[in-house]
Picture 1 (cartoon, rainbow, N blue to C red):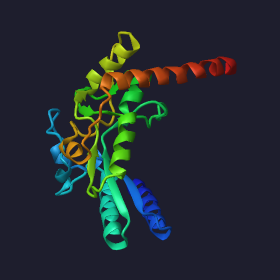
Picture 2 (picture 1 turned 30 degrees about the horizontal axis):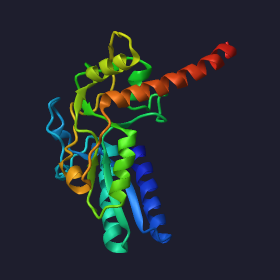
Picture 3 (picture 1 turned 180 degrees about the vertical axis):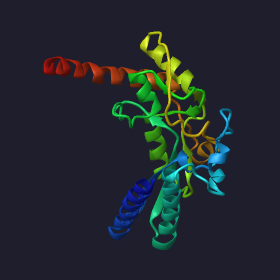
Picture 4 (picture 1 turned 90 degrees about the vertical axis):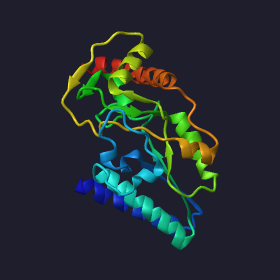
Length: 233
């Protein structure tokens, strides 16, 4: 946690100050739903998280704390230096071209590769496809809205349900393997009320469509590696 907080804080401080020094007029900070208080996310049927729920602050870990601190830094840089900062809180963005192996991938990509589920699989999340994420950023950067804004789908599913949806996308039946591992908060979902009000828009790509596109892309990556693996052996 110390290393995460130290490294991420330095990256964001230096990047924001470089923007100030070089006269950047508009700056995007990609924050995270991990800034929300842990005590609001202890149930699988969690109430969708509104932007104002961030305070009083109690993120689960150092990653969330650093994200929240940098949000404040962005606000003060706008107030003190006139940089038009925009802050978006991502809720589990996924899709093709993302990390899909090595242990750092998001749940959709990880489950596309192997059906190993940490814990009982009943923890809940919402997932937003990358195309919607890009459109949301584009709209926010051209808006006059200066406060932090959720960007995610507001459809919540369990990780077990997510695995079943990926199996459907692959056209196969699978047996889920539940293993010990970090599960994060018990439930998390995005309240998109303000997103709709501010941008007049919300994510459009269904989870099923996004998972199918992601699965097909990961399958292509795996197949591309197979001849290399065969030649090496």
